Amino acid sequence: MRHSLALILAILIASIGAAISAEIKEYVPTVKPVYSSGTLAFLDKLGDSMKRDGYLEAAAIIKSYATGVFGSGFVYATKEGADYIVTNRHVVSRRRR
Image 1 (cartoon, rainbow, N blue to C red):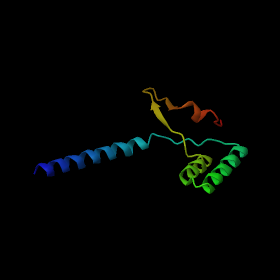
Image 2 (image 1 turned 90 degrees about the horizontal axis):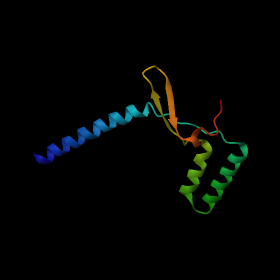
Image 3 (image 1 turned 120 degrees about the horizontal axis):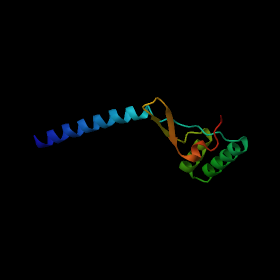
Image 4 (image 1 turned 120 degrees about the vertical axis):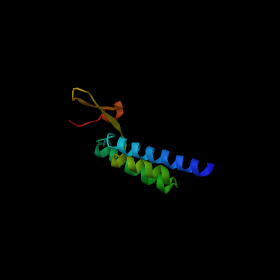
């Protein structure tokens, strides 16, 4: 009986956590950086070189930088209706207007 209650409680907590996590994802934007063609070529060559040398995971990470999958922020909405994106400086340092 005691184990069943603990299992039900664990499932309930996990379900609530999943629901909260799904809701938070609605407010976390992904920012795509803008790289120059030279930077993209460098990342591509570096990824290929690391892959040839057997560093498969590191090569995949380098290649993913070239596709611009890194960067995040949070939306802060004021009572007055203004929205702000809170993020790190490096995420917006090469932004396009």
